[in-house]
Image 1 (cartoon, rainbow, N blue to C red):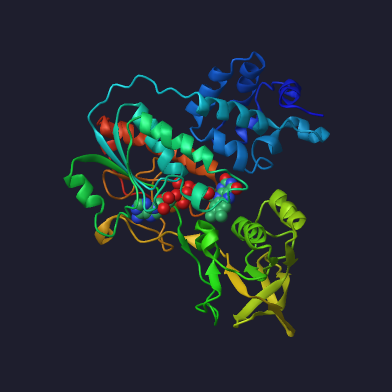
Image 2 (tube, rainbow, N blue to C red):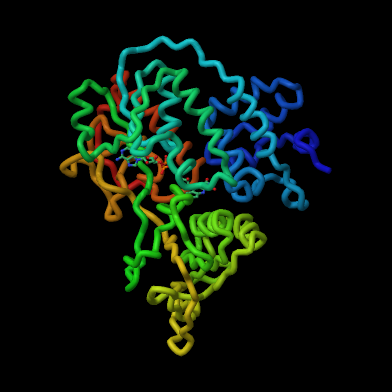
Length: 422
Ligand SMILES: Cc1cc2nc3c(=O)[nH]c(=O)nc-3n(C[C@H](O)[C@H](O)[C@H](O)COP(=O)(O)OP(=O)(O)OC[C@H]3O[C@@H](n4cnc5c(N)ncnc54)[C@H](O)[C@@H]3O)c2cc1C
């Protein structure tokens, strides 16, 4: 049976490791394996943490088949090295034994808005550099989507408690239950002497379907449901509309919390679903039923009315879905959960002083500068919904820019209006 050690021994230490190249934070995988095999766990953990403060989380939730594992050269022979198991072991060890470095405070205050992966990353990096960080969070605890989205059975909240301890030990001041943009905003923070503000508020507003029935009492949005599933009584038959990871997480949670009979329905084909294949596989094992190529057209008190759709690809390659109006059918549902994506919430900077895209996403340049001097942004609030590791990668760029901005490096003040980044 493969063990963590036997996996480490299988790594052939490529000169140009494709696994690292395939990782958005370029994790130094062969070096980490090397230290691990020499039993230098703390050094391995420190290296991974310094490169990616959320390595312990990414080891669990990253789409490894797209990043490290998927790019391992041994994949061609059918058996790629599974780095993430060792990463999880070493990173957890590091969190459990973490001791903060000696830090000389530089007296400069930074406000970080949003305590998800991007906010936590910037807080840790800049606190370690000596900045005085205040982390503002609308919810009562840190984690963002890690706590209020990804279900516990996939990512235990206990990991986030380690991060809270680390932030405390680095002197980060945490303001829970504080939604910036309601009574206080970025301008107030500048008046209070903050040198820079980092916005990482993610995408917390669920997209709506625009169908009749969406306001009925048994209809919920998946990202709201996943925030506190224990407060819901869904009933035995649950229909979930959507084809992504959030739909899958909502389905698997409903099965666990209510022993519900869960159906996912969506207009795409099975192959076109955006959810990770591994998670779809597990959802099937858990007992989730799928209706592919099926468009919801109306929600009633006890059904979702659907119509079959067919994918059509035109000569220029554009894809559309054609409804077959002769094939309508009803899916029985005591509850309906909508999971068709999400967008950013209200602007945390008043008066439209920061340029946003049509979808309300913050527009930044490649250094994460917004159109307002001193305000930086990264993570999902810029890119739209992506992954944890991508939020971390982007937040690292932001932390570096904020540091240089606060040091008054000349290039940073050569400020240009940002063009759309992604
Ligand atoms: C259900 C679900 C499952 C997912 N599964 C995976 C997975 O398996 N693997 C993976 O890599 N990615 C996954 N993702 C995506 C991943 O979680 C996100 O890409 C990542 O969390 C984005 O990080 P962020 O810091 O930009 O934003 P978020 O994690 O969304 O954090 C933003 C934080 O800002 C706070 N906030 C918002 N507005 C304000 C305000 N005005 N004032 C103060 N605070 C505010 C929010 O409360 C939140 O805590 C999943 C997402 C969801 C929704």
